[in-house]
Image (cartoon, rainbow, N blue to C red; front, side, top):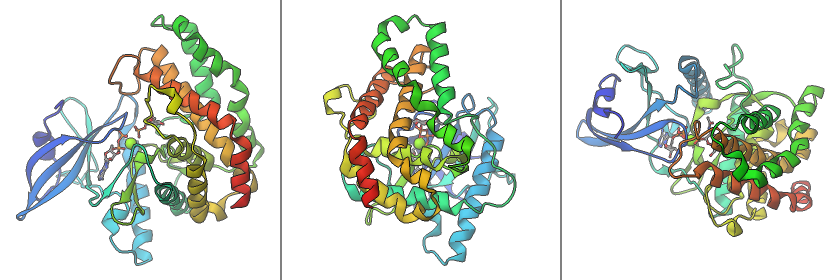
Length: 365
Ligand code: ADP
Ligand code: GN1
Ligand code: MG
């Protein structure tokens, strides 16, 4: 293990004895550990997480966002008499001196959450009811935050889903070609450049006032919502680092990107990468069941488009990272980011052929 978790754990107000910890989950950004404790004779688990401060440059502002968002949701749950509140929103455990994160001697930022038990995240899903429930939960999450009081949340990564900016980052990476990789990915670059027109569409609608800025999760891939083991209900939305102002369609597009893909994100057999419209239908139904009444007509009209756009955007990001020498996403093999970008681009192609069908699905809901 990269870190000494027994030492990190001592700095939090755990009221339990540390037993062990192990790396956990398959996130691309933070270092996540599941730790087991003895709490008055019972074994309980907590999540300790090191925030990647090379990516999130202002971890304290990020934590301020998370505290505001989780407290707001918790208060709403209490007000509506919900049960099981500690599984329905993330619960931060403070440090011994009452702070929301601990900074270790090497300058790493750590936070601790209650472990959401009897629920799981899925890198891929197999059943439409899981898509429905995940999307319902993300929609509910957006809705819970429409009346968050106080100042605008901090932009933890400025321009995170600005698709024009993401496209320009790729062209810059191609020009700089810092790792001499551009020549070997000519076809991928061509694929991306040909689709430039897509990247301004939502930004233009936003500029015209047809789609509003709201608070979004901004990283709604499926493994960022925990589904209850018994009921499949989307019990807890997690990974709140990117909760900030954005467009509802960014969230919808990213969940559809992951739910419609039948393979892992880094599948190398591209013949298997075909977008699943039954998942899209279930996902749209789930999302509209919770967030439908807050969407404008323009937003509804672009649900299908946003799926293609966000899939394209993440493809651009993986390809850019490959060209820049794999400095952003964690990679586990040579060419990993390139493989990931191939899967996204294959999905874009598949989605292009399904445009009409997906629009019909939305109209029929
Ligand atoms: P990353 O930003 O690296 O994706 P996440 O916050 O998504 O980090 O955490 C990685 C994984 O750890 C999640 O996909 C989930 O499986 C697990 N996880 C995170 N927080 C909790 C929690 N409070 N309870 C249980 N599992 C969690
Ligand atoms: C990252 O943190 P994680 O693994 O849930 C990334 C998302 C990408 C995703 C691609 C902060 O999500 O934007 O869509 O990888 N998060 C950040 O799998 O960049
Ligand atoms: Mg995650």
